[in-house]
Image (cartoon, rainbow, N blue to C red; front, side, top):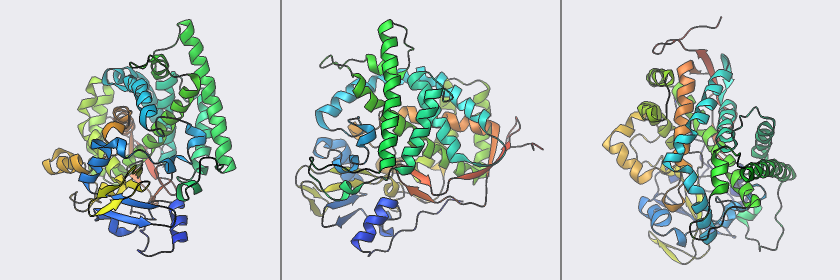
Length: 457
């Protein structure tokens, strides 16, 4: 059983009702016809935007001419108190410099170095779970945060500072709307930006905690005693073009987005993947068999053997892409299919709609991990699958996230059988696609053979 899409709004609503809907949940604010449209135009008194589902136009924006379609400043308005000038929000030469410093830490060979920390976090998650009715999104969030701390700073989440940062991020996520007023109404740079007091306070506390971790790591690097983790690699990296490195303030910005992106998105994808397996017991049994064989002797090189587990995770990312929409901005007049975007118009690229495009996917609303092993499925994915964006701005941690998600799924399914409760989760989007009231599952311990379980009574 697939949880329903959020109810699409009627095609005609008032502007102010639309803005309220958009701030509350960008998924239910969209009309149903967008799941079959190649493009749609939205006009308000303050801005004009185009939602694009045409693969050719998306390729132009993301792959062929990304400098002509930079990230929209509107989307960053609500996130700057936390993320500052992080790689997620910058454009142009500043962004290029940041990627030159960050990307080497996430290359394939370096990813292997993070595997032991990921494995420890995965085993810790499986050990923390308890039989009975469990809100799995919270557990997934805990595990994803644990992975980030272990791989970035070589500290588990039960470390006092790691725990404090995690709790502050939970506060931030609950209080931060995906868009603030400045996203709808263009304001001059000199006009003060207004943020919710609780959001602003949480961002300030998070940055102070991260700053402490970064300063401590700089001291260890200077002393030659720093562990060889991701934060050390990034702090010690030098720009091959200029010889520059990140200073402490810049590193705080980058750690904030590593945590927000890596923690929020991974938790979202893992929660939905577990729900999909809970509602498809036949697939879950096959994944459990594969997972138990892997967890008996886990290694980075044998991750490739988790083929079905990986396809399940891919399918969860297709149905519930953690970042449902990406926004670019036209810097000049641009033809878009049969229309013309003007300078400053917003170009909305929506994985949420693209991944369910009725003209691009067979059974777009159905859970079918087998599609990834078919020619038709691979062709659809080539044209219409971008959970981590695409082109030069593809998420630098995409490979990291895929390895993490598959490993966490394997660790849980090797030990636990998951089944649905009578609470059907309803997806909604804030910072990421989460369930409105959480994802509730029943958990039972699994026997050490295919698909069977034992009671804990």
